[in-house]
Image 1 (cartoon, rainbow, N blue to C red):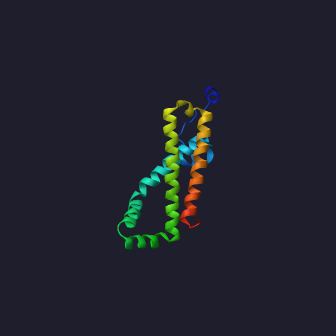
Image 2 (cartoon, rainbow, N blue to C red):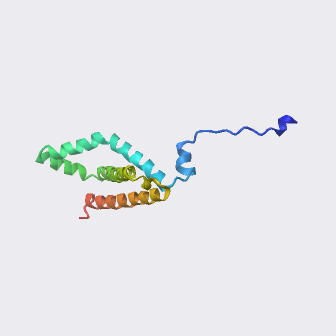
Length: 138
């Protein structure tokens, strides 16, 4: 009888990335924080590619023309667009973190939500402008 009355002990397990992304609904500030980390990793991993592009564009006039031909490929343009988004998002989120360091009221729940929204909107607008310039709209 005593065994039947015992409750099973709860099991606490670490949650996986799948549960974080799909089951648990993060607030906007949490999503911006994760996006800031992802964009930083992208920038770090593609740093050799970015340095190669910079080197090719600055060596000589002939290498600049080769660079322009290389950048005319749609795959390269999409990679540069993703890296442009990563830079702009990382920059905007970094400025947000700096302002939060100077003014601790911005770290409150409501202010964090509003500043996260500013980061998302501003980085989206800047990325759209970058994409328009990259794909030749102006």
